[in-house]
Amino acid sequence: MKIIIRSFFKLLRLVLGPFMLLGELLTRPRGIVRAPAAQAAVDQQCGELALYQYKTCPFCIKVRQEMRRLALSVETRDAQHEGENRAALLAGGGQTKVPCLKISNAAGQTQWLYESGEIIAYLRQRFATA
Image (cartoon, rainbow, N blue to C red; front, top):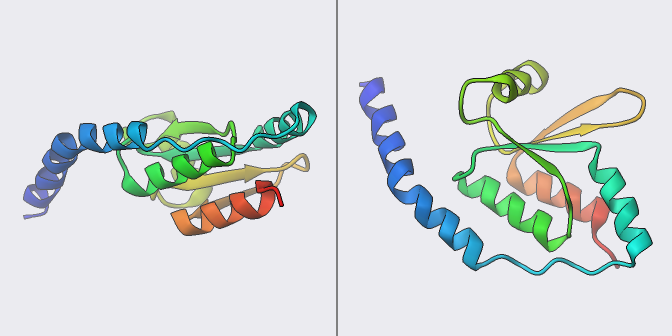
């Protein structure tokens, strides 16, 4: 029974995925405009971040849209398929749930933030301009 359910959702994702990606493309928000020096500082801070995601996950799309709105250049890592990124997500965060934002700092500490709402709140708090 579990195989049937998984197969159903894989097929559903396969059929709906292209439409979701098209919707993301058509509703792409404009990024906020910062002074060049401020944008360079934000880009440097974004080097500490990585978003583990699936390309067609609606919650991941929501986070990517907010990253565009905030003009953030956060590295995205595909964790949908077996491989290095999925293994790193499981080893570091403890689960293969997406979206997941990996937050590193210069001291070598790493925080794994799950849930799209929490990720968006963190990004807005850290990068939104007044």
